[in-house]
Structure formats: C-alpha cells, structure tokens
Length: 340
Picture 1 (cartoon, one colour):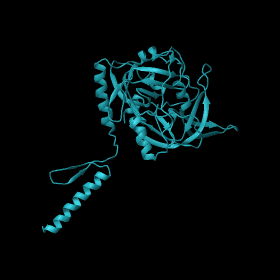
Picture 2: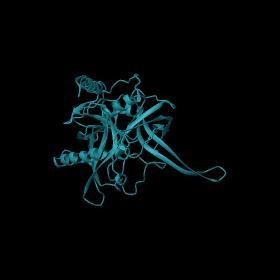
Picture 3: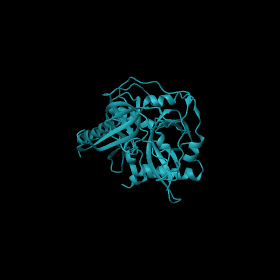
Picture 4: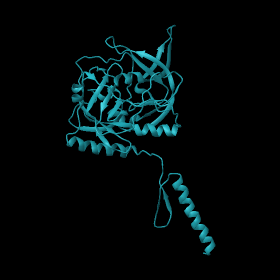
C-alpha cells in the first residue's frame, strides 16, 4: 500500500474513534484492530435482572436479613414523624431525559414468597416503588400486604437499576384508605423525586414501572379526571387521579409524573367495566378500563406528622369481604402472571 493512502486510512480510523467518544460511546479495540462500540442506552435483560436479584435475595434470607410481612404489619407505628422531601421542579425535561431521571429514582419490588399450600419459597419482581427521601420509598400499601390465596408469607426487597438488592425493613407511614405507604430501606441512596399536588385533567403525564416484570417500562398519557372514592363507610374518601398512561399488574407503586419529574400520582389499580344495561333495559357490550392512581396529596400527607392507619395483616379474619366496591385489578404481578 502506498504511504499517502495509508495515512488517510489511519486518519479516518482516529476520526471515527473521536466521534464515538464525543457521542458518549465507549470503544474497545479487538485483535484485528476494529473498534467495538458499546451501546450507550440502558438495555434491560429481564431474565438476568430477575434471576440475579433472586440469587442475592436468597443469600439475604440465609443471613436472616429479610423481614416478613407479618412482622412489618405488626411493627408499623401508630404515628409517623415528618419526612423531609425535595422541592418541586419547574424545569421541563425532554422525554428521554425524564425517562432517565425516573429510572435513577425507581426500584423494582422483589417479592420472596411462600406458596399457600407448601413450604417452598419463590421469587418474583412483583411491583414498583420510588424514592422520596434518603432510605425511604413510596409504594402502594397493597404491595406490602398478602393475599392468602396466593401466598402464606412474604418478604420484600428493593432492586435498583444496577441490580443492587436491599431488604425492606419497616413500614414507617401508611394509609389503607388511600392505598399508599412509605417504607424504609436502609442503605438505599437514590435521588428523591418531588411530590406535587394540584394536577389537572388534560395535563400530560408519564409513568415508570415494571408491568408483569418487564423492568423499567416508560409510558405516557394524560390525566383523564380527578375523583374521590371510599372503600367502605369506615373510611373517608381518598383522592384519586385517573390516567391514560398504560400499565398493568406489576406497576403498583410506580411514579406518575409531570414533564418536570414531579410525582403527581402513584399507580394503584385498574378498574375494568365489561358491559352494562342501558336505561331502556338493553344490554350494551363493551370494555372500559380506568387506570386509577393515588393522588400525590395523599402521599404528601404521610410526609407530615400524623397518625397511621393499621396495616392489614397477611391472614384476614374468616368471611371477611373484599373492601373494594367495584371490580378492580391491583397492578401488582401475581405468581401466575409470571409464567410467560
């Protein structure tokens, strides 16, 4: 090869490496001299994410570091102290920036649970939570309770985006009425998301969650309406936000935010209405899904000093009826949903 063409070829190679570095892409040279470009995106491998978390969780169980749901419910305090939260932001982020911001503050809720009719323990990524303060996460209260038809006991861990696994050791504040709680995870240091009340119908919103164990799903939509509803006559109505952003079981506890990353609501349930009867007695077929979230105001109230509502124990009293007045599917993954 002539010297001059060889010179230009070397220059082109150096320029390609420069451009890769400028774009935030790391490169490695193999034995043939080619540049291997590393993908700068956050790419989830769900199977490894869950299986690796399961292995760490089992080791924590052997070391006696996990706390059962029964213990968490019984030890929940009657009153909660103030939690110092971060100020709201008015800096609007591009959707790609917002997705990254929410990912850094969101964990997957790993659930080590015992089958109802055996002593065997299993593991799944079953729900979502987000940071509101150092070592403090917000999630749905039903995430921290047990349906005895699916499991006899359970223990929860928080799994970060980089695979770090930490035990949930305490429920520090709870509202059964609003289906929300603050939980303690010692050693967890994630950027806290601000809480913002006053969201209005029509506002665009985004959601970060783990639907059916698909880790770190980012969806968007808008606020459909604001509502109040009560589970029974013993509870005062709770403030809800219905949204059009997609989510499904496994998303419970996920943050619903505005464009600046302020949490305006928290994923709670999915209400499905399949057919109804019109005023003239004719049957009308159709399915309407209302994605119902706990309003940020309800979470904000738990960050102020006040009383806690009791956390439901894993085993309810005999013949106790479900408290929901209408068909609901709480978006927490069930063991059956994981067999995909």
